Image (cartoon, rainbow, N blue to C red; front, side, top):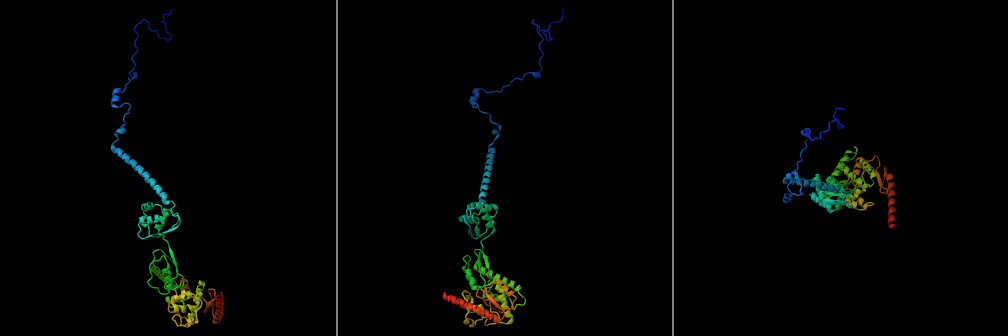
Length: 402
């Protein structure tokens, strides 16, 4: 038998079972010892119930540290944010209304008196239905800096014009322009009468201006313009027109100065209402002056007898008694030009005298259609006169048979 000790199959000697003390296990390292469990101190339930802390979470440190000053500024900031948002919304909706089509249903003209402030202008616009909100108009004018540029005057607004377009119109000064038209050949008294009849012009004219001093034209003016101002404008315009014609005149004209040019232009103006004939009629008179012939113009007779009132009458023919009656304007009786203008000629008549047509014609007579027939010789002229008289007889016969 072997003297080896029996094993338990693991190679280790079997433990003693005789109760002998076995070798105690070595002490484990300190790092491997278990950490004791430390529980937080909890007040007894009775204490918690008495202090009222049962079930209440502990307050956060930030809430405890928040002072009344911090809460005040926090609320102030909130209010500021809300205010900014409110102003933004107000600006947005205000701008939408400012650029949106306005309430005006049809085109309208609104007069803004001088001295009206932005409030007065806004009130007038709202009362006429041009804008919907006067306060918005005032605010927009002041915020944009346009309030100081708003002008007085009479303004025309389109139907549906936005508040922005209305403000732009007033700032630009695009006031309504009125017109008065003075036809060529009127006397100065007739011109004054037309100015007095205009319903927009204001004021009075102290005296009838000199004959031939007012240029016939269509004039623009704004509401509030006086009649005296219009007379002054017409006189200045006539002066410029005469100057232009005088500078452009033919050098060999038998005209000594600007006044003679004006006088002859007034005669030409009253002799024909056909614009294309003016240079030809002027040439006939210029040719006569060169030859020392009398002008023999019927309108000069009428003006000498009746003054400017002659042009208020419907005169188809002149009477022999009128031709024979002496007067200083009768160019059948006097040589050269009459002593003054017989009407207010237009720019075309002035230029026709300054640069007459190139022709040898010395005569003309009405042709019955508003124009004239021209002739170089007396014989030819007499035949034209005979035809004119026949036309006149037929006309009178027709009027008598009606």
